[in-house]
Amino acid sequence: MAITDSTALRYTAQDPDVRLMLRVRDDDAAAFEELMLRYQSRIASLMTHLVARRDLAEDLTQEVFLRVYRSRKRYIPGSKFSTWLFTIAHNLASNSRRSAARRKEINLAPSPGADTGANSLEAQAVAASGMMPTRQLAKAELREIVEWAIGTLNDRQREAVLLNKFEHLSYEEIAEVMELSPSAVKSLLSRARVNLRDMIEPYLQQGARAETSDKSE
Image (spheres, rainbow, N blue to C red):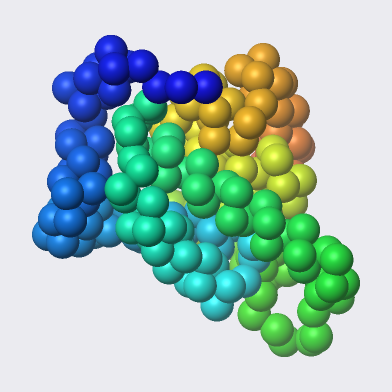
């Protein structure tokens, strides 16, 4: 769908990152560096959750910004800059997962002691959960449990949660990134919340029991 002049002007006026990207279009290296400073760690974090391999996530993050730079001359603001950027990231992550599936490189059984993905986070979550005697849930430990629980979601639910809760994208923006309807995004997030609650509640309850036990001593 063609981007109208009024749409481009609206996003240019509303979004300072769009204005930076327009400077990148005019070959302003400082503007590109500023966009990388603002978004590089966020894209890297998203990619790490989406592809479950830190080395691959780093490579894909670099590729995101290479694509931004290479497409600069064709850039026309038809959405918020972050929406456009996360769409590039989404497409790269999806292509990477499909390629891995075709090559049958998805590792379903990590070797003992491997510090990868959800298994590592699960071990940390169990240790933090209160299953150890009189252990209370600290904020960092709770964050590990939440990260592990997010890792148990399917790919689409996980991405929707990350974009909504961590990147604060609206249903409409997530729909644009993931090429879904807003109602489909709402349904994804609803199912994801149920799944997350089912995964996290046992740890919270165990931690609460540990705290009660401490106070009674």
